[in-house]
Image (cartoon, rainbow, N blue to C red; front, side):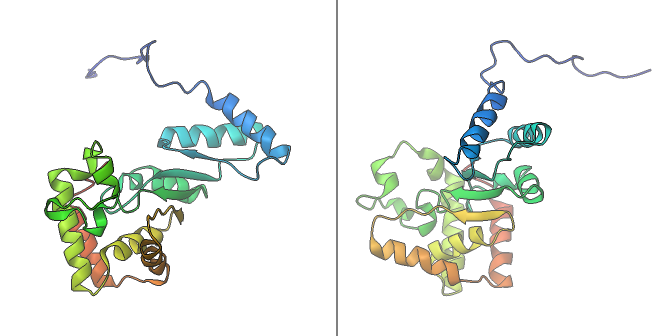
Length: 212
C-alpha cells in the first residue's frame, strides 16, 4: 500500500502571477549587449533560488555568459538570503550586492523609543512598516546594546557583519550627510570579535528575520 497525501501531477494555475517564460529572452538579450561591448556584466535583483538556477542553467546550455551578481536585501534583521540563495550564489560565484544593510536605518538605533529624526527615511516614508514590527524593534534594541557593550557604533557593527559574509560581493550604502558616510565607510576596516559574533547569533536565534 502506498499512502498518497494531496494531489498528484501538480500543474500551476494558468493565471499564476509568476512568469518565468521571459527568462530565456531576457538572458539572450543581455548576452547580446555583452557581446556588443555595451555592458561588461549583468546581474539579477530580488531573485529566488529557482530563478537564479534557471538563469545559470540556461547560460550553461546555450554557452552564454552567466549572471555575475544578485542584488537582494541582507541585514541583521533580514538574513533570509542564507536560506537557499547563499549556498547557490557561493558555489556558483554569483556575488551578493546587499541592499538595505541597515534596514532603512533601523540598525543605527535612531528610531528606538519612538524617535523620528527629521529627514530620516522611516520618518519620510512611514508606510514601510516591515522595519517597525515589535520583534524588529526588540531585535534592534539588543543589537544596539551589543554594539555599545563592545565600544562599537551600532551601524558599523551591522555593516561589518554584512560585509564579512562569505557570499558577499559588496554592500550598497546610502547616506544623507558626510558624517554618516564617514561612519559607514569606517566599517570597512572593522573586524568583529568571536564574542560579538556569538552575541549576534544569540540575538538572531531569538528574533530570526523580523524584517523579511
